[in-house]
Image 1 (cartoon, rainbow, N blue to C red):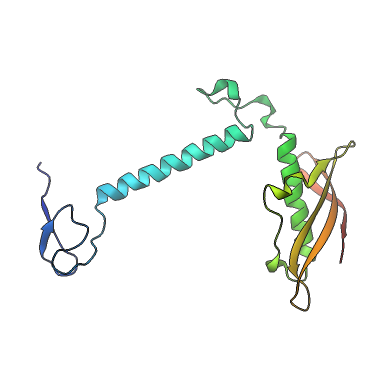
Image 2: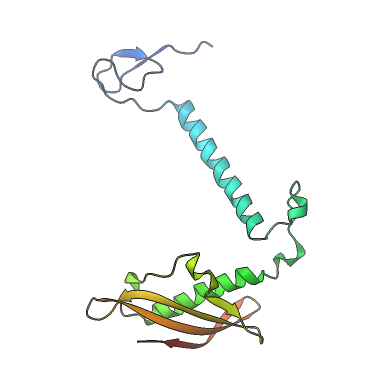
Length: 166
């Protein structure tokens, strides 16, 4: 089957070259052909799948020695210390947000800035010391520092204590 050489403009219905992105008669932008849309969609899908594989590798969910087979490590069931510290920070933020006057205005430290805000204590508890900027009752943006003590058992987080400077 031969490839078409012309198509019709979506606005003025004049015959234009198949590869045209604008109509030569009315200058209307033409929609992308299905081939371009399918190629772009395939590229995005491959990009997402590649990024998820890279995410697993970076965060230690895949054994680096087995890059060709991508076997999960035995320790996947027991989350890494870094993952648990990150989860502790996220859980603490959830508890703090519940106590804010305007939780929708909360601004947290960035990913790299907040990376050292959570630590594991000798007894297995997690200590999170960080801050949040949010609006107070008068609408002013104020910084509130907080400290949270959390415990992780099995797959459940428990807040033991939360201290907030108000």
